[in-house]
Image 1: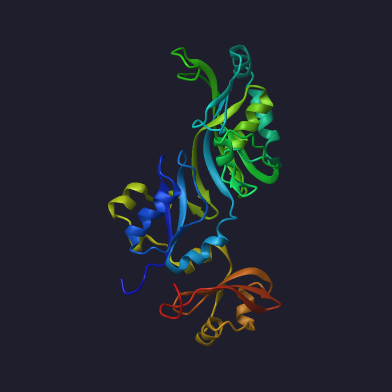
Image 2: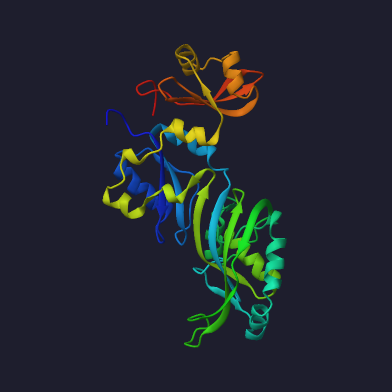
Length: 325
């Protein structure tokens, strides 16, 4: 290519990979160190990870707050330190209580309904949130008792499949299986939601404990995992700059578009405010917190706010050779 790679890369992260692992592979595949991601996925989780490459890393801050969609499997009957299957077991419910719950799926559905909508949620203790300057998971590993403050989140949709009573092995320290209930779920939620915490809270509300055994992120805002490249493609070099979503195309999925003329492109590139013309106002909101300003060539010039038909630059995207990438 004639210039440095620039755009968003959608990756279908495999289990066992950290988000940092994916970034490192992308740096090699794209031939640049300027790669970042918009929101981590735990190593246990799979699915959509959005990377910014080159100047498009400036878009990432505008992606972090997007809604997410997940597919998950919640296990009822066992609680763990980390609220997922990778943590040590805290408690195993009485088999009779688990069997009684399995026979009354309407109880599970009722608690799922209570956990839908605007709720308050305490993040999992084993999380990257800092407490007095140290990560919560570091404090837990050091043997400290950590309780994080509850925070508002929105569960827009919490749909479940019929619960399954299954025999899980290796939970009680012996060879005998333990009966648990597995519930497959699809969750649409606001940014900042912990699906592990949702599993924990569902189990707690039902009196048997719960944790997450599988998690896959399928959507982040308008971006879907079906359009992503695989970890294998990234590692094998099959993913290249041609796999990138151009910054203007990505921004157009997120914001209204302001089509600039050449003079406006120059002025906006110099940080000047623009007075929008009648034609532009017919196609662009006169007041909007973020609008994608696109040059006649199709290049994303910047993200601007519009107030009373007048723009203000929020984030600029210099053309190749005009400034730091």
